[in-house]
Length: 427
Image 1 (cartoon, helix red, strand yellow):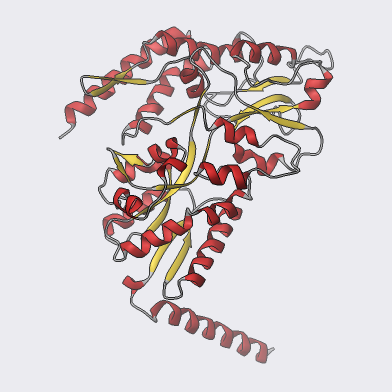
Image 2: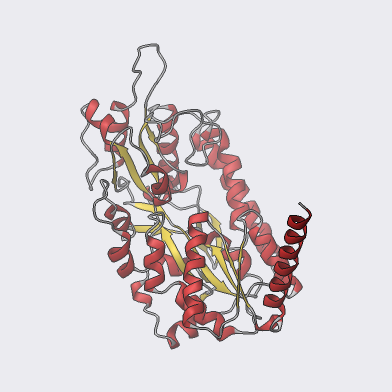
């Protein structure tokens, strides 16, 4: 036993010595630090790609740190303030305005052009998502939008035709009504027709938007009849048509209780490819994919994605760029596409590597969906706070306590008061 303890101590000492030698063999400023985040499967692929970069660039001195998503931006901004930020980091698109507004991201336009990156091959929304005040500060590593998953067994059981490409809101409601069923006749709904994702997609597909530009500044657009149309349609799914499972707040695609698509108790679920890793394990029913239906303003959906950016004060800007170029290159994106949870940011890679032969569902729907109107929220540092305040005002309508028109009227006033203050206090 004493031998084992001494042996264990020797191993610990040796490990500490080796670890110390690895980190202090060269100056800290020579080490390129990379922060990545994501699921364990995603971070494992990031590590694999970075290991391949090391093999091709043996002179590179890299340190990879897997960071939790929670408080990621706060930790990043604290590091920037302290002058010890990671050189390269993974950034969600909705965090871009907050981080870009610090002036601490390296502009990438000149590097992209000098190294011949084909901007035309990228889905335009991906580059827009990483552009702040007209300057590109990141390159997307993955990005996608939503589609409609549907339970083929339920459609067959109740004699409902599968969704076609050119279906509309009216057809969505018609199918959802037929698929909202009290199976045992006890007066309680056992299967709901639809979980509809969130309100933004319906506002956009109605032809509306949350804000508009007037005299070079943002003002509320919540008084637009098209916003009322989209919001009313969304709320009616719950309270008039009763085809969606009730839930408090109704801000996400996570229904309450056991009414989920994977449980076979929801016939259609509008969400993104990030659900593929879970849904591909389902064996209790057959399912497939369809484009989301068209609204009065067309087929418009929301973007979701992440990318890589560079700290402006990195001691090694060229090395950091070389790493990012490798991380988002076609070969690396082909490895990430194997997960099936998000599309590669380039059209050419999405069409050749994301689509897998032999899957029983139509993965091409996700690729095709990116060629319709995919939207992003305003790239303003105050947007996330304002959007929460809008939703606070809309909660009464989303919970059925107030009319949509009255909730939008109040949200319109709150939004304009907020924006007035923002512009009044701006330097």
